[in-house]
Structure formats: structure tokens, C-alpha cells
Length: 206
Image (cartoon, rainbow, N blue to C red):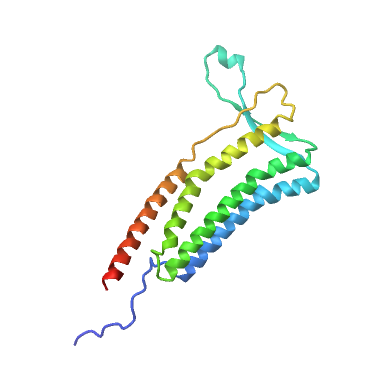
């Protein structure tokens, strides 16, 4: 006796189905919402309550006892509060958080737009190449833009605080992960561009 074939197609466990798309969209929404809460809502609540602006910073320290024995040490981290800030200072405190939220929201919207075309069976849509390039730009350049904005704003706020003679500094770290991810997405955008061209050539032959 021959085995009766199963008429039901096997489900691809790795397939990106509708539930996965909704889950990813929800996750992106949560990330944007949490960023908005931390970078915008919290400063606004401090403003409403009349609380000061916390300003962490780094400063070099001198420890003669350690210097005498040649022990190396680094900068210390301090946390001061700008009491009674003006409206202008409140707005300076808000700008970096608002910028981060806008960048995250724009990137999330682009990702959802790409997912929508993939779900519709048209992954090589012309708009997707531009969308992927835009996401790559946000990942590669966005962290540098936010740092470029935040550093002088934080410096301006710290300049209005009595630091007791300490020389304020800030740690600057190279955002390697977003930069690499942006470069990979830029390459993926070129692959989508090639795929779209090949699809158009095949359709032109049919």
C-alpha cells in the first residue's frame, strides 16, 4: 500500500506572517513610547513640578596619595542639579530628547512601510530602495547628530551651575553598532535595487 499524501501544505515556521508583522510594529511603537517617556515626558513633568534639571558630568580628579605611588585612575562622575531653571533652559533640556524621539519615530515608520510592501508581495517596490537608504542614514548619522546637538546644550546648561571649580567633561563613545547596521542596510538597499531591475527585465520579456 502506498502512503496517502498529506494535502495540507507544511507551514514554514520561519515565514514572516501577519502576526509577526503586528508584533514588530507593536515593539517599535513601545520603543518610541519609552523613548518619548524618558526624553520628553519626564523633563516636562519636572518642569510642571518646578523641579531642577539633573546634569551628570565627568571631571578629572587629583589624588596625591595615588599619584605618589604611580597608581592610575580616571575621571569621576558627578551629578549636579540646575535649580530654578528658566523657560529657555527648560527648552534646551527638552531638545535632545525630542530629536531622539523624532528619529526613532521616522525610522519605525519606514520599517513598517517596508513590511507593508513585503506583506503585499512586492518587496522590490521602487519606494523600498529609498526607504532602506533612509533607514541606513538614520542609523549611521542619527547618533552623531544627537550627540552634536546634546553636547553643546548640556555644556550651556552646566555653564549656569556653580561646579566648585571642577572642569566639566563628557564621555564621547563611537556608536559602532548603529554605524555598522546602517552600512549593512545601505548594502541591502543596493541589493533591493538590483532585484527590482531584474524583476523589471523579466517582466519586460514576458
